[in-house]
Amino acid sequence: MFSNSQSKKSDDILLSCEDISHSFEYPLFFDVKLSLSKKESIAVLGVSGSGKSSLLHILSTLLKPNSGKVYIDSKDIYSLKDDELLKLRREDIGIIFQSHYLFNGFSAYENIELSSILTDKKIDINLLKLFDIENILDKKVTELSGGQQQRVSIARILTKEPKIVFADEPTGNLDRQSAKNVMSAIFEYIYDNSAALFLVTHDEDLAKRCDKIYRLKEAELIREK
Ligand SMILES: Nc1ncnc2c1ncn2[C@@H]1O[C@H](COP(=O)(O)OP(=O)(O)OP(=O)(O)O)[C@@H](O)[C@H]1O
Ligand SMILES: [Mg+2]
Image 1 (cartoon, protein in one colour):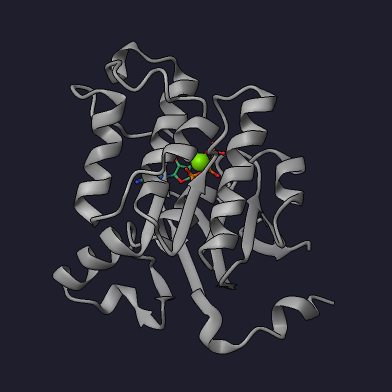
Image 2 (cartoon, protein in one colour):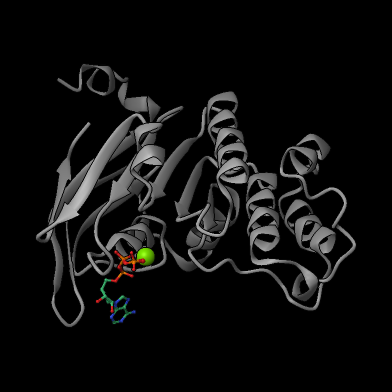
């Protein structure tokens, strides 16, 4: 079982963690261990409040766990200096948040452009077409629908060309067809760029498109695929 991922070379591993435990008012999870390699995708399922977003935040540099280690590109991220951590955050990882964060005062295009300037990467016009946002680029963020905002924010993240995409319910605001297109673009991006995807979702069908599936249940992260 799981032979495909176990046969990966260790230098293909982009993200790994060991013995992660974390609590807020109650213990969220104990001894979480996983690894994510180039071109690979992981989905995490679990009921609301089980700690999926918290785990995503821990793995993506935003929340130091009570115990355990997280490695990105073999670097122990919570022992990096502030400037090293900022560099890693800016260049190596892209986070699609459960509630997307765009700059409200700017247009859709300016939001994407900002990401391209910060990371010195070109805007991919095909991506904008694929996401069906090429005609709304001049609109202010506040003039966009929830689903349009979500597609702009995902386009913005992919424009950075991150090594690891962390996505928290990325298609929650989208209709079935738009969700399918957006996820196909993310999977294609991962494959073409030897990047990796860590996905949190409630959508069991979407989880099945990933290489590995885990479920957070009773404070444990259990592998299902
Ligand atoms: N910064 C925080 N401070 C205190 N408690 C928090 C914090 N972040 C999350 N929690 C608590 O941790 C628990 C898990 O939250 P989390 O957002 O990780 O769940 P989730 O599985 O992503 O849920 P959902 O499916 O609803 O998004 C919740 O009870 C939440 O209130
Ligand atoms: Mg959540």
